[in-house]
Amino acid sequence: MIEEKRKLEFLQEFLDTVEQKANLIGSRQTPFLQEVLPYINVEDEPTLIYFSKRDLKLQINGYLYFEDTNALNLYVVDYEPLFTNDSIPVVNMTTIKEVANKAKRFFTNVDSIFETADKSMEFLDLIKLIRSNRNEIEEVNIFVVSSKFYLTNKPIDLSIPGIETVNVHVWDMDRVYKLSEAEQGIRDFDIQFEEEYNSTIQLMHVPNPLGNGLIDCYIGAIPAALLAKLYDDWGPKLVERNVRSFLQARGGTNRGIRDTLKDSEQRELFVSYNNGISSVAKSGDIVQVGDSNLYEIKSLTSWQIVNGGQTTASIHQAYKNEIDLDGVYVQTKLTILNTAEVNTVQNVDRHDLEDQLIAKISEYANTQNKINKSDLLANTRFMSDIEKLSRNTWIPTLDNRKEESKWYFERARGQYMVDISRRLKGKEQTAFKKMYPKEKVITKVELAKYFMSWDGYPHVSSKGGEEAFKKFMDLNSQYWKQSLNTNDDGEVTKPIQNISNDFYKELIARRLINAYVAEIIDELKLKGYRANVIYYTVAMLGHLYKDRISLIEVWNKQGLSDEWRDVVRIIATNALNYLRESAGDQNVTQWAKKQGCWDGFIKESSAVLRALV
Image (tube, rainbow, N blue to C red):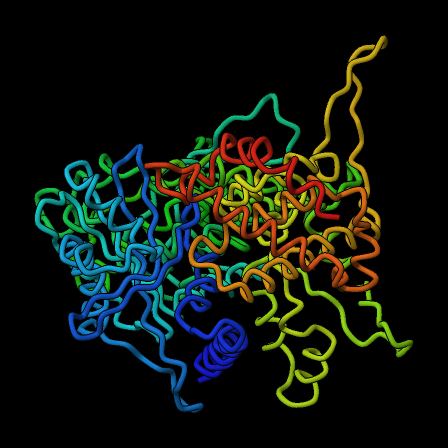
């Protein structure tokens, strides 16, 4: 009941954010998809569109095409804002499949849609893409994004004539909630294998004669039945450090694992077929067996599976389906982090050291299931410092009243809503929302996109949050990454710099400029490519007039002055026309992601636009 209550509160806050944005732009499905997209593990950012024909049961809300793999992602939204406050809104398998079929029908009916479509509509780019690449597309991934909870967790099977592989990925609110919870920080917990499960794990110790005692590593195998029971009891806590792999098991359970476990003749080969799991723990009750190199694991503190979440979830599903797991073993690597001992010797922060080690282990161990760079770098000192400044820096007022609110930098996804849920309903939550209004929440990937646009990289922002975040971190590496300098005395380590309060204010100022531009573009009702037009308009504004726009002044005023409105209108209209005309036969959104697009915009338009002020 407590967990259900927390889910309801999370859902209410999530949908309230959507509804606020919906009131501004006049639609619900697009802002809902925008809120969910940061949780979805896609390296590039999809193009958001809207097409719906209820009578023909057709709908599409976004798409993304990967030319190198001939794979097409289609996004379709199932959004229902109304639900009773005392029960979780649930969606069943039949409804999810109906929603997925809307995207499938769009794909299979592109010819007839093209014949009747308004040729100025943005979704026409998707139709042209499908028609021109129909013979090359090998894989279609349909993402069903629902505002309800898909608790049955059953996979959806669809097929499309002529397409080799069709996958349906369900992103419901249960999935978003679990990912949000998992990112909020991990509390220590103990698993007593011997006492609670009447079992131990026997592993071989890996010699480490050259090490400094930072880690102890063990390798071997764990019984699949024990792993399934552990996951059944501890669930997401076992994979909080690898939330991506854990969540990818939903709706797309590895069929190879499932089929191998089902077949009694194949079952013994599981350990040969599967790469197993990599895990870390802070400590444990580990006893040497005689004089051998074999060790018995009796208990572990804060055991985390950093790679193999999908394997674990698939084995658990087989266990729940009463498949016999007797005699099945999963190869295992266990790393014990001796950070407590190192802390006392080297005078380093133990928690920072743990985060760095686990992030590296996760990054290097995860070759099949990609981990987002923004996930791995969320715990860097740089991100933590921005978070601290956002909690301590008041927003200036313009009428001499005392400051009442602050910007809220969301270092981990869902952090804001979790922060709200930790407070008592009523006065505590009201006071928190007054201090940190919803419209003042900014995520790390949003921050990156705003930074890149203003600093002259609109093509990088157009690639999406992950690409923008990578570039953002590279450009600001002096604040989180030590580097080597070469001088007459040889190589010396350059220390990490501290960010200043002004640096933080200028970050937020870039967001304020972006919002200012977005508001004007929405007023113009320009048809198509909204995100790209915003990025290119902000970039051109910065390119031409950066010396006349003080970011600190933007912070102090919490926005740009009205003198820039006409300038922004002209640049925005010019940007849209340029993107459409310069793209030629290319997809406009793909063209906007290229350096040549930005270079061409500067060459073709900067001379004319420079004379606006």
